Image 1: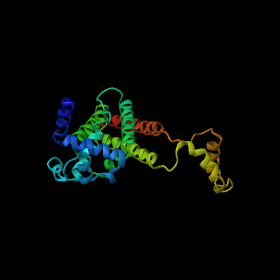
Image 2 (image 1 turned 45 degrees about the vertical axis):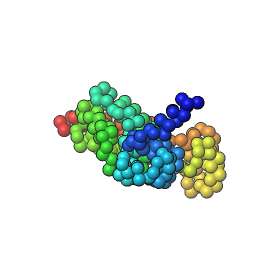
Image 3 (image 1 turned 90 degrees about the vertical axis):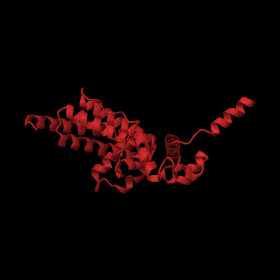
Image 4 (image 1 turned 45 degrees about the horizontal axis):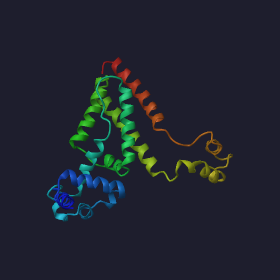
Length: 228
């Protein structure tokens, strides 16, 4: 019994740190979204006074910066050399998977200037992979920006789409009278495919990636051919 009491006292005396604060903030955001995250709520979760948080994080903005750093550290960082298409494909798939685990994070990625060391290493490795594959700096910049815009947009659409996959076919059947074949022949035809089960209606991240990668490869070859 005495040993357990000592352990409990030690646990209560675990010092507060920036890492501990951010870890708690990450759990809170994952469970309740960013709206649930405040200095007061965070202090309550950590069982400390709110003012003690300011010794480790200046304000909520700094917490958000730290959360971006934690999330980006989970994404597979590109490697230099080898098949650049495979590396960029894995990068996009990894980013999508991580952002689906942290559904609040995508908007932070696209709406803030994120310049923490983890993000900078991630971006630098991305540009490096493309440069080593023969992309010029301007083309590398266009390439990773296009890939990220597609990946983040796809993720946001999936997170916010109002139907679950299992609801696609019933919804298509329900709305079919609103798209008469005489007025909307192709949308009507697509809906019939979903209703009949010949198409599941689910968009595929990989399909769009292949289209982008194909186009970027053509641009890379053209750039190399003219010595740019």
